[in-house]
Amino acid sequence: MNPEAVSSKKDYLLLLPSLIPLLIIFAYPLLRGIILTFQPYGDTGFTFENYVRFFTEPNYYMTIYRTLLLVVPAAVLEMVVAFAITYYLRGRMKGKGLIIGLIIFPLTLGSILVDMGIIAFFKPNGWFNQILLNLGLIDEPLRLLYNFWGTFIALFILGVAFISSNLAGMMDSTDPRLEQAARSLGASEWATFRRVFFPLIRSNVLTVFALNLIMQLGVYTSAILVGNPSSETRTFAVVAFEEAMRHFNYNMANTVAMVMALTQLTCLLIVFWIRRRGYVGSATTFK
Amino acid sequence: MQTSISNEVESVLQSHKHKYRKRLFNYLKALPFWLLIISFIMIILGMTLSVFFSAFGTEWFGTFLPEGYTFEWMKRAWVAYDIGSYYKITLKIVGVATIISLILSIPSAYVLARKQFPFKDALIGFYQLPFTLPELVYAIPIASIFYSIGLAETIPGLIIVNLIIGIPFSVFILIPFIESLDPRLEWAAQSLGANKWRMFTRIVFPQLIPGITAAAINIFIRMFSTFIIILLISGPKTQTLPVMVFSVLSSAGNQPPPMLDALALTLMFPLLLFAFISLWLSSLTQRRLGQ
Image (cartoon, rainbow over all chains, first blue to last red; front, side):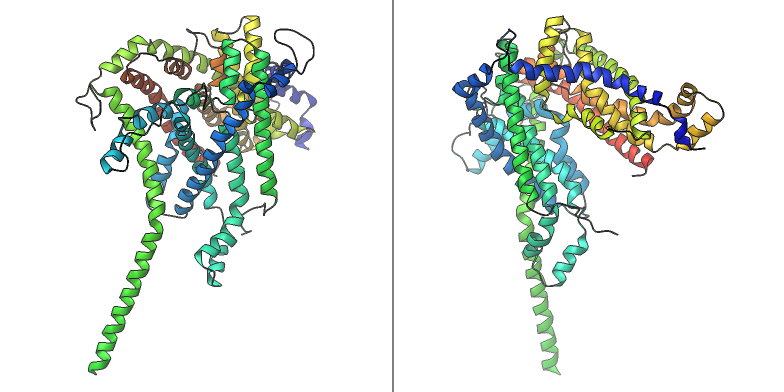
């Protein structure tokens, strides 16, 4: 007897308990949110007014520039640092698990606690400035809090942790015999890295980079707690929350959120366009 | 004879020198990497310890270590922010949401793991949407709907929004567990006359206990940290611990910093506990599923 014949159309009803709640509390609000952006404040109808306002008033359109200026350099720096760390920790070595664990630790704590740590560690009389002053590297404490740099440091720490957690496994996924072959044919270490190892891992690296970038474009807590949300770190999320919680203008708040989503999509498409122009495939050979 | 020996000695010395140089060169090459790793870890440890010293220190201003140690700030923060009650509320909201998510997602996970049907990929894509879309895009309209129908700032409202994360997440965790079950047991039960319900409760469910436990712990942790959407619809008395901590910190005008650090630590303890539990869980899961 074919066991599949036992199954009936009725089985698909089992999908409904999860599907119906999700349609009601997720899909419906999502569609409604898109409609909200095309309606005037607290009214029905159809208008492009919200988008026109976004792209004509500096209070709104500057958020695109400010968010990108903060997040893109941070994301690039995070990628470089996390790549260097995980590349060096490739293969088997003593204490690797502990080192990776410590580097990923900020992810466990989350944004709020990282922000508190930054306030306690980087404040003018905190350890960071004390150490630099005692070493004679600086004459007066660096001002790293409640401005651009506070949020930048928070993004950097969480980003390095996130990218490292993803790359640590990928670094060991390439077949070491490919590199051995290159070395045995007389390639230098640098040439092997540039011509053999990096092309194999490149597509994975770009995927992780894109994920991290779109995650960080939605930065909110760090922009509020250690940044300066009224000017330098006025990101998309800050403006959207302001509109929703202070002015109760959900139409405009959602317009800001939509522009944020479109910015994220654009970044994603750019990274994937770059990714497509190189080798996209598995880094392991068939064994 | 003499010369040959001296030559030998010479060549040995030479090779030693060469080896030594090569080793030195390797150390120098590794140096920047180690500097990077050590300084990053130092910053993380420094940040964590600073918060601890601040919360448990009596007086800490401009010196390297605090003057003395005390539990005073912890006690004061606990009373001032009524942390005990927020622990209770958070446990209630997230616990109930976990149970509801599991009940609703087990049947669906079973169908998705066992059956092939048209548009299955599209359906899986739909379940992935809550993780792939930026939270703000659906959080804002939900807030506007909830405020208009009076669900905002209530415990049921907070439980309902947690399901958006809980249901799809537990579906995805359960699928591999169900795939690893032997379907022949189910066919055997049916051939012996068990109806669907009995087959499910007697055969599938008992085997799924580990998977359900894994899913429960995972979605509990995930929902505990859900932030943006809770922040938008929570009121002063009905909010989860992370949102309460953030609200206090973002409006902290004249609070003493050690008090705020003590508050942050009350959030750190559950998160550290979760980290250990999920480490233990992932090693257990890997052994069970044989990955």
